[in-house]
Image (tube, rainbow, N blue to C red; front, side, top):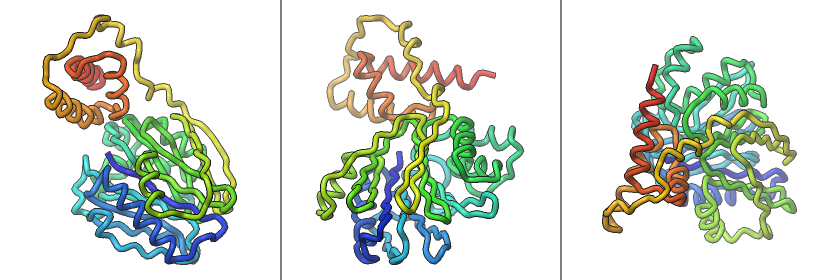
Length: 314
């Protein structure tokens, strides 16, 4: 579980000091979903820069240049790849057709090694599963809707990606992991975080004079590009494989019995299941939906176990 966050200031509404403050507050709220590492990407003087460290967000001292209109950020909870080795942390650098880009990922990918082997991609010292997304884009020799669609349909697991290029175009590739994006049309400002709760807390602390925001709803399978001038364009990828196999649930009894655990133990068990679920390609929200549908935690565990066997079968 990690957190994506960021700011687009398309009309230069904020100065450098204010942008730095906004990003600092936003990042600190995102610590809820990860404290192992923090990183940001931004452009200044036509050059893409990535600044990341293996520390919690409140310990990272941001300094956003005045000419940077778009800042893309990430707080990390490490699942694969030692956060102490900074190369394993987000955002990751990439290069496509001579143009640099930065990529951040929220989720877990479990076919990265297989993709590297089957696609003939080069070995890398980066141990994080997310880096396969960079390599797949680079393999297409372009950063555009087509290469992002290709990447999103190749990877297996849970994800939402953000990608920033040297021209300050920001892409959102929305999978089954959460994302909350607010737009302030009057000021040309966009602010986002992985969850609405995190974004709301940050905005309540900031008291920005921007008026009421409009929430941009992105569905699983959407790709959104916002240019540095604020223009929006949409594309889509095939996300059918990310939809939970609801028909599979019909094998379970209609009358689900209580597992017999006390309330505290049940909550701890549920939290553990959510962390394990990512290894099988399901988000914590997917586990919550199963529980809401009437499944006990024992049944969810058995479901994940069975799916794990099916995925591992030759």
